[in-house]
Length: 340
Ligand SMILES: [Zn+2]
Image (cartoon, rainbow, N blue to C red; front, side, top):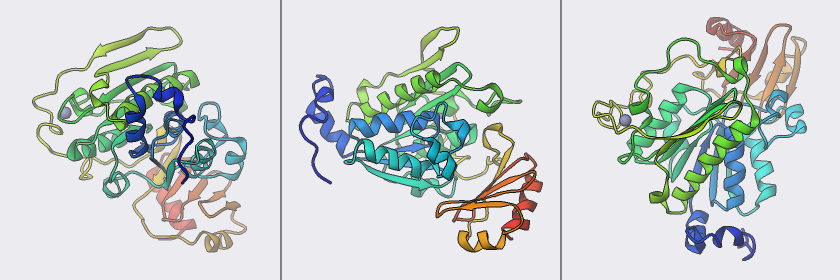
């Protein structure tokens, strides 16, 4: 890794509160981005160009055509190849700044994997699309005293909030229970790219302050915006809840896996099978599936298209079954095509 020319970050260093010291600290910091969709694309782009030392990208999904409208790291070629988002992102970011160490983890953040995937990280950015994973991040962050930046967007609406364990409220102080009933999702309600770009930018800014050693400069506010009809608003974060089971009681129910629901992805008529962590040889599987549907595979994933379902299998044994929300059916399709 060559040292960057003095010009590379000159505009950032010139900004007095940031300065050369901030740049140096940024260059030695490791950040994790959980979910490399619309929010994660923006966060990763800004942080890689800013000169964060290490960016760990954690994403279990692969690039599809419907992502391209807002997931600004990806190209039509990535969608055609069905590349995993983490890997496609790594390639794009390396072109933007070859000096950043980028770790592409094609993996699911689970209670079992969180410890390993988030080890050694100075700040975690939320680029996920579901409540359970955010609560899992919150549990881990509070337990390990690692700051994280919450963010979400749907339709024309977005929200962002920093969580500084021991200092601010945590996500569970703000949302004690999962939302009840059907929630709007990007699939059902759509989402506009300027909103995800705005929220991702705010998250990246706060993460940059922390990574550069300016934690005191983090804006302890809840930012909300409706970019279609307004308003843009900043409200004070609530005080820490003295009854919060997480940051006060130090019970980490999500991290211990006690609150885990079967995961279906962002309401998109898909089920993920993630409890069979056994490696699968994709080349052998591709040969076995010949004639059962259209099969495409590369070293990262195999996709089988049948008349009604699309099954994507990853080398670690994980699979995403599209075309159903029935967990039982998804499991039986997995058994049928991949094995028990
Ligand atoms: Zn709390």
